[in-house]
Image (cartoon, rainbow, N blue to C red; front, side, top):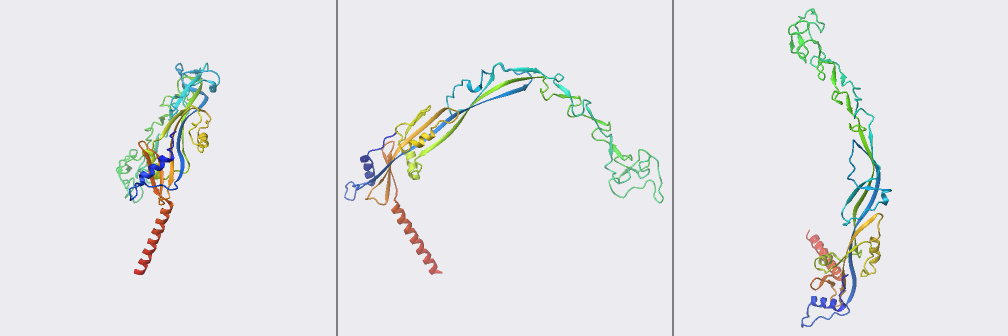
Length: 361
């Protein structure tokens, strides 16, 4: 871990930032108050292993010769952990001597169609009621009887004034002119649109063959079964920043940009380094506890010492000092006293403005 600058170096950096006095002398930092801390950021990537076993059945003959084998319980099979814990991996194996191929009880993968019962067709009404003359006479001359009739006071060729059958043609049964519905020519029915008057339609489920593929074997006539074991390596990540109460944002931003962070990579299941501050060790140790099924990990740890300096001669400022890449860095922020004074002044100015506005109304 990065070493904290000694007190003399901290005060020297603050003095240089303040600059010489009006007389040109270096400032004297009387009764400085220094509070040291260590900023630690730790991230961990774990590879967690899970193992499962199940019975598999596939249609037809399945070539399993290229798949790796295991013996005994899947949990006892040795598998190397992943070289990179952040890589997701899945290994599929076959239990040795578990392959079984069976011939299906169907007729070479085909069975009778359950919808048409092997007929290949469905019965259908050959005709349908004519939609063009529904509700009116299909033929005004014979009324679909085939023989002309004559009603008192109404000639045989009379037509409805309007409606679906208002356009009339010669009747196909009685020969009455301009008496029959144009849609059915006086018959009152039209051929079924689905079967074209044949009285049956082909079965769509079996395409008219009367046979369909057997679902149990997928039409292959045989099945292959085996015991499959699966080993999965799933990555997961966690992060921890200490202390929990973080430095002010302007300080964190400068630290991130200019800080001389000390970085370390921990592999395996090691304890945190001795250089980690004692107040941070419990938190880091909890993060590094081995999880169930964890087989590999990568831990990235970085740290940076930080000092908070208050100087009696600078009561309006608080200085944050940390080692930088080229020099000791200093960041100052307004002290609580200055913030409180500025807040009081702002409230006073606002009060005066309110009074002025009220007097001007």
